[in-house]
Image (cartoon, rainbow, N blue to C red; front, side, top):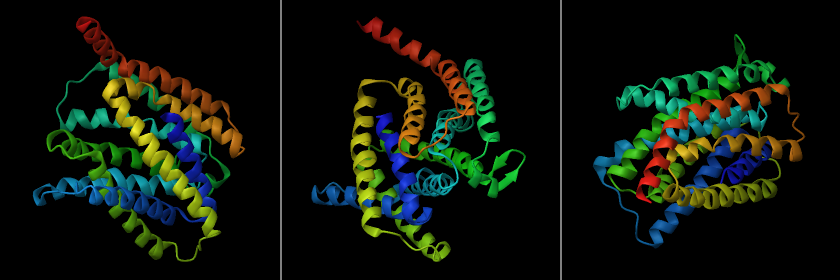
Length: 295
């Protein structure tokens, strides 16, 4: 699953050769959402209630539109493996938000894991690709890094609304993704017309070929595998394995994009693995204890 998501990140980087980020995001999300909505319409399974629209709006805005636009924009300035490392911080942001929103218990082991995770990526944030130097923000941050971090926080916040729609209101992932992705993609296309009119689309045939390949890999295969794995394994376990996304992305970037892997990446990866071990330890321990008890 993480290998498929890594391929999607590499394909997104390739798409940015042909088109600007907002246009790329808009087309990919709009087409993906439209395909899902068409399937639901044919199956006569597309129904939502008006009083649930605010939750759909939160999912649309915070879990799709903002993170999608910000990540695609930041990807044009940074290597894919750097975006993958920053994306792996999402579980930490989700936990911190859960303490405030859901009032979950404060666990010191998780906080230590989060601290190690954030500290370990500092060398990677300090090292900038030539394109990032152009958009230096303040201290050692570039605007691309800040955009990617903001995307993580936004998506983590949006997942609370998504969780309400799936667990409490019993909406299917296809319905949620179809509605939110199609509208987010349409807004992305509008943003492209407003802010990117000076950057035309290059080689439309190549661009849309990669778009549909990416939709098939990430929107259909990877998503279906994710749903299947959620039924067999716990969320903490899947979270723990998410570091493999970074490894696969770095390997594919090295093979197909000639990315140079420096010691900053290995330092961040090692810290990420240690932090995830601490962060997920209690949850995975409880999971295995429960399984052994059942057996």
